[in-house]
Length: 81
Image (cartoon, rainbow, N blue to C red; front, side, top):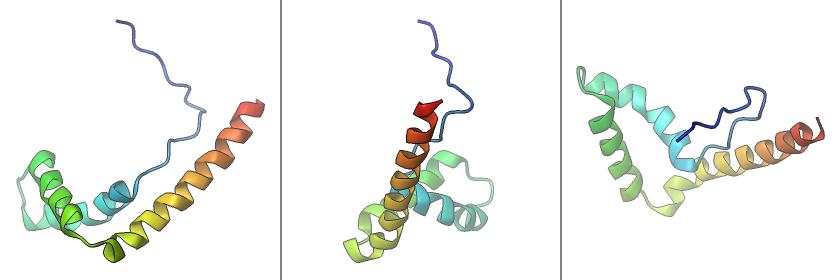
């Protein structure tokens, strides 16, 4: 199977609310568990995300919505070229 090469000038895909949360929380969790690999740390953070109620997730999902709008805007501009 051939790998399809991505265009380096194409806009980055939007991040989900979970990915925003993950990128914000991972450094603190990694500091608490030095020597841990990415996998177990990501599993801990994923469990925290699943345990959160909707109101706690809201700020992260709002960031994701803004990122989706950014992506839509950038992809329209990119398609013109």
